[in-house]
Amino acid sequence: MVFGLIRFTGSIEVDEGSDSKDFITELSDDIVVMILCLLPIKYAVVTGSVCKKWRFLWRNLRKLNFDGTGDLIRISRDSRLLNRKRQMYVYQVNDVTGSYNHPMVEELRIHFDLDNDHRTLIDGWLKFAVKKKVETIELYFVDNEHHTRNDAVVEIPSLKKLYLKNVNVTEEILEQFLTNSPHLETISIHGSGYLTKIRVSGRPLNLKHFEIDECPMVSSIHLSDFDLVSFVYKGQPMNLNLANLPNLRKLICQGIVVSRNNIYKLLSSCALSLEVLSFFEHRSQTFLELDSLPILRNVKELTLIIGAHEDESLLQLTSIFKACPSLENLTVKLIWFTPVRRRGKVMHFATYLHEHLKLFQILGYYGRGSDLELAAYVMENAVGLQKIVIDPRYQVWYPSVSEKYFSKEVERARSSAKMQLIPRSPAGVNLVIL
Image 1: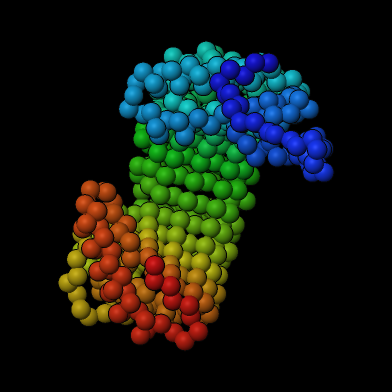
Image 2: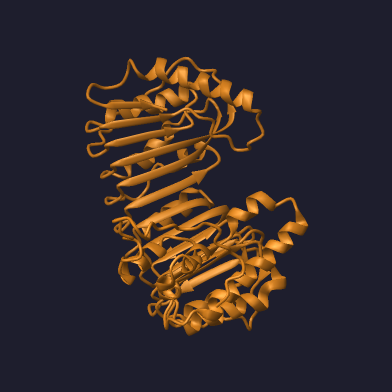
């Protein structure tokens, strides 16, 4: 095989009169293959120029990682250079897949700026994956201009993990993957513009981990009657319906419709199994409605991402804390919409002892009365607390502030955190202010 994209320009000189030994070339093939696994595929292939013994060892690699995103950072504004890099990238993938003769591939990763004009090539690489009984496929494109077609390759019986970024899959294509890949355990879809109403159900499914991230057209997701372990959704508000998922342990919902009925129904469906929970809501006041949640006895890790408007109290979040009596790690991330300090008096809610809480984090601590109230509540009620992490860095919703203003506000918030929290920190608790 001629690998035309890489030329080895260095040289290795050996003093034949010396007593030194060339330990590198004496390494066993198995050890060399283990080393090559740590290299990008283009560098793994070029090692054949260093030592004749290694010439075809790269063909024993079970993971083919064609990650060309590093080149894109340097050339993204030069269209002619970008087109040339595309041609080189396509040649590289074709050259390697055409010469690879091992019967199996565990993992195939295609990461580059490719679009719908390359769909025939991409389908060819997927057919290669089918032939090699691939278990993991990652397709990461820069823009979501690659569209799957109904005749695309969606029957990969050996497939266990599927990661798609900026690939416009439809509900029909998703269903075909689930139907035709009986061993499929993990699906992650990021940036698809075609998904709208997702429905996944049925006991025969082997799907354990499901993630939908920044798919703007999704309006509803229904998951039921299979052994799902983790579900992650990040995006615009939508309706989520979960039913009969007895093994669901991780639920991250950063973009669902938050209301009393919706959240109660959602959490009730997985109250016995849930261990990790995360919510996002624009306004903390919404959580005032959530005063009667089902008890989540096994939740040990809770993350809440909340919009911080002026100096609205955050103590209404305690209704969720109380619903998790086994809570060990608690993180509250505050998104500063209007970071102002108006209230000097610190409010207190009724005492509720959190016996198992060990780690408490506030990301976006600004020094408002509401920030201090929340920190004080945890300090006073978490009897087994071991560590508090306060991150005053600007958790801005829209990154439109100047660097000078950013630095000034962060330092101001850091000073407030030290002044407010150091005197209140309980003895024996490690307080870390970043």
